[in-house]
Image 1 (cartoon, rainbow, N blue to C red):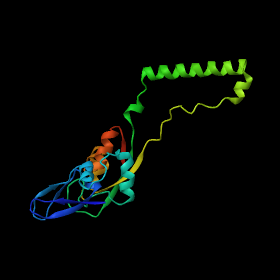
Image 2 (image 1 turned 180 degrees about the vertical axis):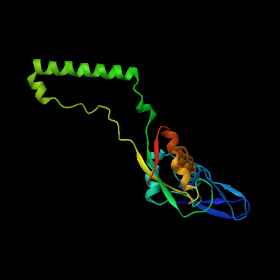
Image 3 (image 1 turned 90 degrees about the vertical axis):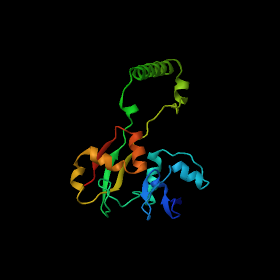
Image 4 (image 1 turned 60 degrees about the horizontal axis):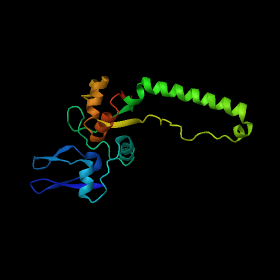
Length: 191
């Protein structure tokens, strides 16, 4: 969906949700700040619920809303060259093993072993009718994306460093939100 953004000079431009938070230049030369995604949606009378970037980016990619600009993500010059960054989203909360969590998991294991011994020894009928507990917490796979971003031929040699790639990706609002949500993400350039 496209949203109308007005310039103080009276002109307007149409932007998509993926351009939320960006700044464009009007034909009169004045900068036009695009509001946040939730503000754009509220102006259009749509629900403003803020969707997690790892859920909204696949939609934006599938509908061609990303990247939102043809300006080089590094120098800002106009370009038609698109590169892709391979981003493996790593949740820092799941990379650390907390001592308390480890102790709880050990205790759960002991309880399961004792329960199995009890069922096998004392109740063969109950053992045959036992069903696996569906309340066990499972961790989904980590989100992995190949994110397109514009970069001119002159700036491409600088993309050997992960920090430069990350800086280029952060020019897109949704990419920046994704990298803020998953700060330990591994980023490589797709060749």
